[in-house]
Image (cartoon, rainbow, N blue to C red; front, side, top):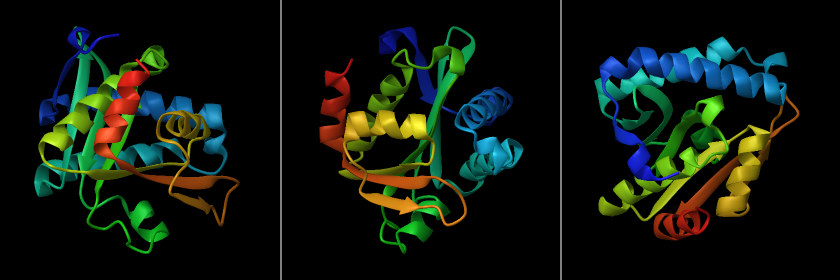
Length: 186
């Protein structure tokens, strides 16, 4: 999969309906696959994510990107400062000034085909151009954690959930080294 086969661009408000559909599909798929729907409502997660998207246009704290293959939305990714409230709470605000990468959602049809890596490289290269040296991101989804460990190594923070049977993992990674690691894996 090459970047040329995708159109990656900054999201605009006209992308909202496509993003909502994609995120609903991805969240439903992940929650069912991971058994998370037993303790967390996927619609609550979708509402939270859509609120983040809407706030990005109002407050300019995040930048969302979309990846289209022809006219089909394949995936999204975003970066912003400060990191999400879960990262801040679980690190006692240690990462408050750091750029967070998030909202990496790939349509289940396109998962495990390299699209996520393409989006990660794209956003990391954009951040490198902005002179950002270090970023953070998190995951509670087991299948995602396996991927992140393979690419980025062990997480910087491991925080067991007080209510549920999972560990919240947070990575703090070097932008340049992450680009190198991702490109090696293509």
